[in-house]
Length: 412
Image (cartoon, rainbow, N blue to C red; front, side, top):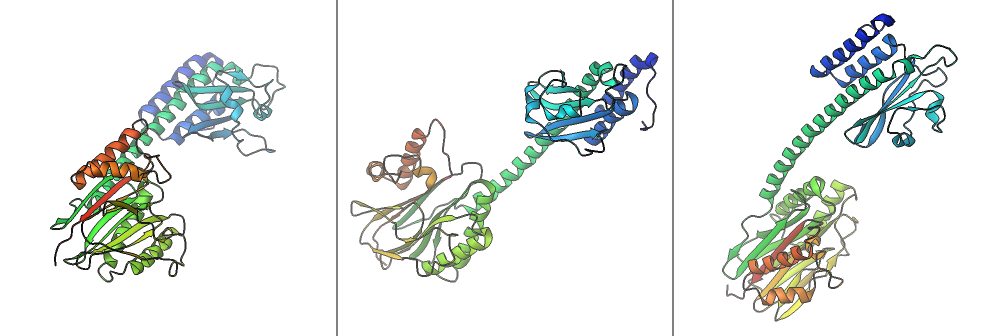
């Protein structure tokens, strides 16, 4: 209705109020926009009931903002800020003797609740407080409260419905991202004579920032890695996928681990601008020369089981993404072996489940699982079962990745 419509005569007031509620209900049923509902509320209050001043605060995701404000004096034309003290009011309240600053401009507060929580606060005021007749605010208070409840709940339902749609869309996109990531993570781990590889991957959410890989270079050389991107979720997964693509491209041109680490570090800095870091372990197995070469860039030290001893593979450099100047800070470690060895690589999600020593995943734990395991799969399953038992109350707090490799001495 036009804003110039005159006030309603007193003899028609009851019918007017019924018609107004019907009009608002029809607007809600027709799914009009939030701005149209707010405009209708303002028209009824200002032009039909002569309520001279009003401000409505509404909650959206735990944040309060001004949804409607009119009638403010020229000395303060802007909407007032939300006062946390309003949260203490649960029923219609006169502000005359309250300590809140809003009482300077408003007389009455109407809290609006949806189920058990407040969703809106309606403040009403009369700019001429010296007049003798009953103010429109007081005269029509029950009707205004009813109208405010109907409109506020309708707006809240619109928000909840929109949130539901956005959540469904996000879940759909997350499922798609999970499917894409599953294609990047090796599903069929390598196995041939003298060489066996097994792995497990449990993202904290549906997608994660852990990464492992095993890349055959030729008939006797293999590069493998395990990595952990700082943070979780989509951002970590995107960086992980970029690292995976970069590594596979680099392996086509160089097998030098130092060159690979330098280029990966450069890419991480370029893409994250020092906002994210990556712990990265990369190794190369040469079954002909019986050499294991590796660089540990700030990752949990893998466990090498060789000649009935456990060795932590700690040598390398700092995390990727920390500094551009890695050239002279990288230590490439080479281990010569003669016979069978096993290697276990893991990420924080598993090590944080074990608290026996500073390493988290202790040599004592690993020795016990190793001695009772005939296969790599059995070894990994035993570790995961132990970790899940220890984290049964809360579950894993981070992504979990395990990569196990067994190399036997064969002739080339």
